[in-house]
Image: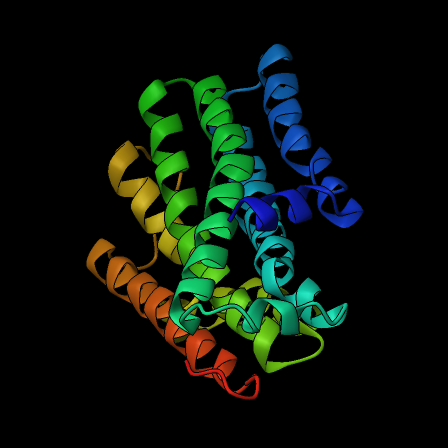
Length: 232
């Protein structure tokens, strides 16, 4: 886990993502400083930027990099040569990805909710971000083992499925992580600043399906990367 964290923060493409969360907080502070009512900017800043852009993009780069980078540079064979069960490798990578994504996105989301008017709203946004980080990172970690272009495939899911289809077709929202985040944040915050389109039970169950399914798929896929004389 320490090696994964060091490698992740040492990669330039991840460091380039840090301005996105800062932009989220900056826009909230700017709107509040100009005297704009939260009802006029929360949806565009929190939903349009935070939930629909910052969270999935950070999770995509993080989830696809914790193991995908070792596949790209060929160092995966050294990892597989160690006497570690495949599930422990995946769990370690997933924990790092979820932790980094939760902190990178959750803290700015909390600050944005705080600027919008209440600690409760900030905590609700942070809790929703953690749930989204779990589901997204598990999905994108699995993609890094299934395809050589996990970032491209992940962007197709985020932009096409969640960005367009899930907002046009009500049935598609059940398979949209963004709507799980909104459902949890809306319930915990008890505010009209956000609108939820799926129920909390559905959001929790489907988030668990994404998390467990992605993790199991990643473990199974990693087992196909075998080293002679080693068992998984």
